[in-house]
Image (cartoon, rainbow, N blue to C red; front, side, top):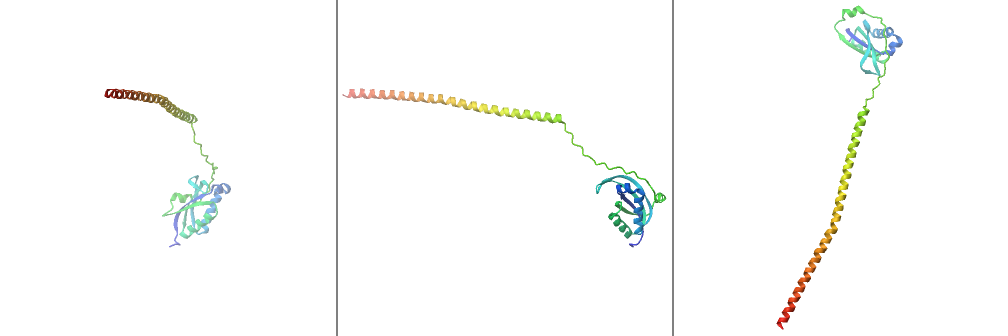
Amino acid sequence: MENQNYIYQAMFLLDNEEVRGQGFNATRDWVKATLEKHGASVDVLRLWGERSMAYTVGGRKRATYLLGWIHANQETVAAAKREMYLLGPVFRVLFLREDSIPEEELALGIQDSQVSIPDEVEEIEEEEYVDTKAEKAEAKEADKADKADEAKEADGEKASAKDAKVEKSDQPEAAEGEKTAAAKVKETSKEVTKEETKEEASSASESE
């Protein structure tokens, strides 16, 4: 079963530098010769277009697409793919088994073409735009808020210092009040002592 021939649709991605240097027809002929060397019968081989790829492959962003229709067995397809990946202008290839070759494709056959290969322009990432006015306004507002907080802290410290002074000024008055009260108590005790002495003297004279 491995030697049975099938119809394959094939898509070859050609390196644009190779196509630019050798020309499309020469690179197409290399693909045709490689397929035939391994036993394939090439029915159609034509330009499908030069275009950008969906993702970068080996640093390449664009490629020349070569469309083919061939008769081959599985061993032929595997051997041709292996050689194409080792050397030559093909860097990607896909084989799909089909039931038949469309008549319009058979009518095209092996086509000569000219391809215009554009230069790949390296994309430059744009720097993110920064609105400097808005940035400066935000910085100014933040600075104002910081100064307001500092002013509040300073006012709080002043109020605490004032309260501490008031407490200190009240202490001498309290001390004076305590002294006055102590003096009054002392005077009162003296008066009481005098009265007691008089009463004792009076009692002693009456008893005599």
